[in-house]
Image 1: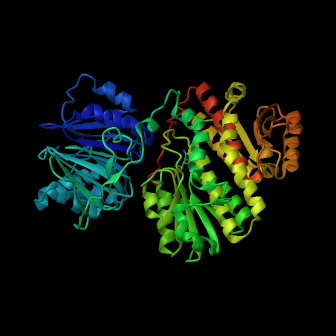
Image 2: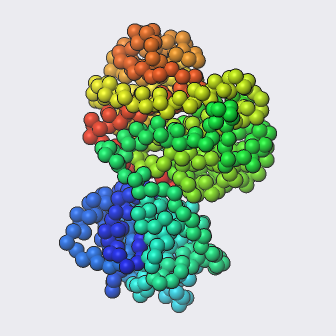
Length: 612
Ligand code: M6R
């Protein structure tokens, strides 16, 4: 996690670095730091957020047009000022910022201690900067060569930037497993964890590949070498993102803006793919792989967090429509449990950021076993998008709020299209049924818009429940993943304990928790095994639980049982997750705001989990 940004060019580096750091703050906000290079390396850092750093730096000399900055999500060493980046080498001629984890840092640390190095922090990063200094001194090599040699000794993941006091016109950057993009302007270069700090200056970018080192010098072209010293030609790409997409646009929080963007983001994820008039679905990104998927013995979906919940919806959809067996795996478990995998398997990795370390490792494992690996990613050009054989972009636009909202519904929309495409090609669905689903899918954005208009009603419910300590979210069938997602949204931004369960499983344990203080959110829409869900609601009511129900418009049965209800438009059972998720996002949002939580940057979390 952690966000890094660096600059070399004619502009004042400090304001540009701070602006970039604010944009990257979603990646971690335990501490922040900046280094400017003039005659010396001037480092300012402190515990807390980027705004704390700005207060801390106020009044200091921050001149210079080469510098780098870092916002930290702590892995090794507590989140304090000492452990904040940048870190200096022992002789104070090198400074480093790092996103990732050096796994063999204890061994390297003790070797360096034996050679006389003193450590001032508890971080793995400090090891790397001392190691580079040690190599420079002992092997009499340039800083870039020392970085290359050092990286050959390192096990783990890194995106690093190094400034050297003796080379005031040069930046060294390298990556393995953590993202890094270089913006190429006229006479200037920008380096960052993602493109958001770069977009307002240039849309020409180079994505650094794993084990590549970039040597960026004033008035020179970028040079790229691998850590095995092979020269690479930088490949300049055009960014598709716009500045407007990464600003709040009048909303109080990015999360709210992103919730409200869903009519558009769902539409965008289907645009050019859903052809109601022609009665077909097309997915250009996987066209060449369709036969492989259709012949697959099974599909394995791997993901983390909210993307895993989307994967569960995908399992229901693909099995239901296309009759291909699907398993859904947490990437963090899948990568370590020696799964039975082969050439007949198709693995689908789902990720908003495209940078989640566990999902990337699951992809590598699947590839090594001969499986075909497809990606469903939101961030164009991300590591997962590049590591997979082919894939489908969700096109939800940048998601900045740490709690995933529009990315989830876009993932579900894309999985629905995939299920439909496979079903039509496989002949597991009649054309009449297929056409009916296409027509209904086309209506989803308008129905989402209708639900957003219920925000005030949902806010009123939030007022009543904001102070609870626990809550249960229950649903069955397609609504079970929705219950999991609703619970995750509440806990991550409000810090209220919430559990999602299949409604019928409640009686195998969680029912013991129900009393008059326990709110139970039922996703009780009138499709599928609706009657069975009503029985589950009765069971909660009999034990005096408080019931908040998501119901289908016009439903009177559930309304009569519930303490509060939120009506959503009717749709086909398979499409309900695209609608039922929306009120749960709003409920969490309103509760978190009322509790004064940091909605966009909840404690201990980061948007992009690039460590395992
Ligand atoms: O970028 P990814 O979709 O791979 O991220 C996976 C999870 O880290 C992410 O969904 C996380 O659970 C969110 N905070 C949920 O809102």
